[in-house]
Length: 80
Image (tube, rainbow, N blue to C red; front, side, top):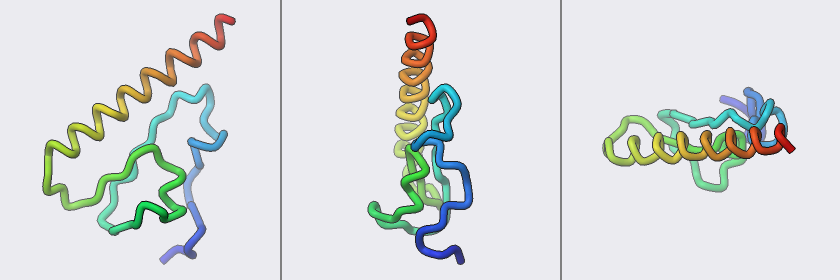
């Protein structure tokens, strides 16, 4: 198991996100508390097994919406 504050993947939410366009979803079988620092690297979190397909669809829709918003903002900054 990882040390409590170790995030073994790039943190796209805090600056390692070229152009700000990457939207991340953590999908895991581990139950994590909302305050878990490992969640800070991700935009969304889904726990397996999926019991509510509606929650999965909603999360994916939110992720796509956030991606579009970031892409639009990035494009607007490139134009300015």
